[in-house]
Amino acid sequence: MAPSHDTPMATPLADRHVALGARMVEFAGWMMPLQYTGILEEHRAVRSRAGIFDLSHMGEIFIEGPQAAVGLGRSLTSDPGSLKVGRAQYSMVCFPDGGVLDDLIVYRLGDERFMIVANASNSAAVSDALAVRTGGLKLVLDDRSLATALVAVQGPRAASILAPLTDVDLTTLRYYAIAEGQVAGVPALVARTGYTGEDGFEIFVEVASAGRVWDAVMAAGKTAGAVPVGLGARDTLRLEAGMPLYGNELGPDSTPFEAGLGRVVAFAKEGDFVGRAALAKAAEEPRKRLVGLKVRGRGIARHGYEVFRGERRTGKVTSGTLSPTLGDPIAMAYVTPSDAEPGTIVDVAIREQRVPAEVVALPFYRRPA
Amino acid sequence: MVPQDLRYTKEHEWVRVEGDMATVGITDYAAEQLGDIVFVELPEIGRSIAQAAAVGVIESVKAVSDLFAPIGGEVVESNSELSGEPELINSDPYGRGWMLRVKVANPTEVGNLLDAAAYEALISEA
Image (cartoon, rainbow over all chains, first blue to last red; front, side, top):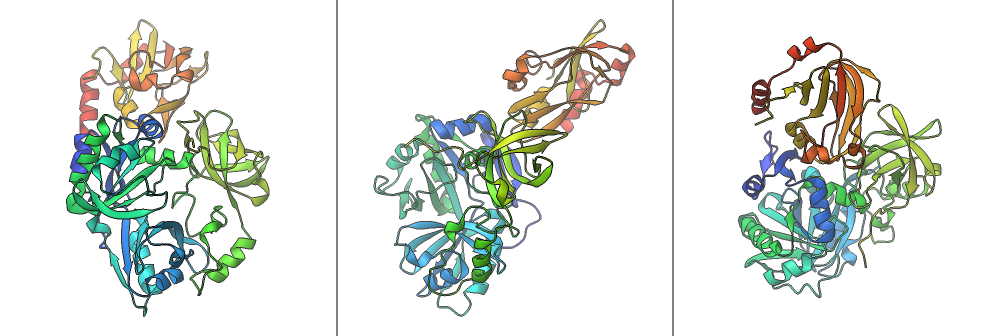
């Protein structure tokens, strides 16, 4: 169980961010870089070249033992037991009533060894839930969140930047795969996963090695035009890519089906899992639906702004920004299921004005093939 | 160091008064706090504005901020470049990023504003 802290925690790379001129903000109990040169510039760098991210605030929980797959099958909505070694899947931990406790990625490192990467804000809650749900099973839970650093490289040039630094063969590392090896001479897990909609890698190392890996990636990235990227651009990138943020699109009051993510619920898997009965009902009876919105007026539709269909209130914006790639304001919102058809015109209350927006299918951006 | 010939508000607006005309914008400090500015809503030409009233909106990727009138009077011009290039406020807040020109109603209101030294003291404490 992670200790609670009153003052925010520093990642092992904090001094480097400050030296790079980052504006630091508190996020989920950590001091994190919000931006270095600016959100728009950092966002565009990731889309056209590469960005380097410190994600050491994320949670890393290892599950090991003969019943590791069984335990995860009971605890998560998906079926990690169906993963081949070296593969990963997006998944969720749900409450018994079908609400979402966290969204996460589970990686299979061995027949009896898995790693879960949880949101920083939920990693203690995920650890606790796993402990309760896997009680009595032959497995060990090892929450290494505070011992693990995470450096991500994302963008079209990410592979060419990372390849010379690692013995992992990136040409055979597929999307949603993970391999153990070395990066910059230190032991690392290299995963081809990310939260930007670009090709990219997430590099997990011991905290003591974080500086060495960051410095090596930054140096290798220099000629390719890679830049450090903060949480501000991380948010605009994932929003363009149609990816949910826990606390905005996902939470205890939303089911995976309402968020359009029913694919994480593997009803056909063996054995019961927490939330099964409620989720079966939720699949049939969504109370709301998550949609994309393209704002057809001036102004950003922000989290919490109300959405109307004519005079009738239909829902609320969950996330919104100006899309640096599209040049227009975009948002995600929950609306009444009957208003969720792409092409539907709704109005967002932006301060005192009603600004029209068009419902569109997600994502807003797909990287070129 | 902020421009020494301007006056400032606690809300980080600057104003240049020349006779009975005032040019208004926001400071470099404010622009930096906001981050990349993407939209600006300015009051219409002819509108009467009162000192310290919220008269417009400055929107950045991360935040929305009110624009407060540093001085009262009639809006005679607003910077039309800002609708296509709001980022001028970030790159040149005291120059091409100017926002409004106001015909000053009551010149004694300038006495309510901070001079450069007082504004610098304010932001260094922040």
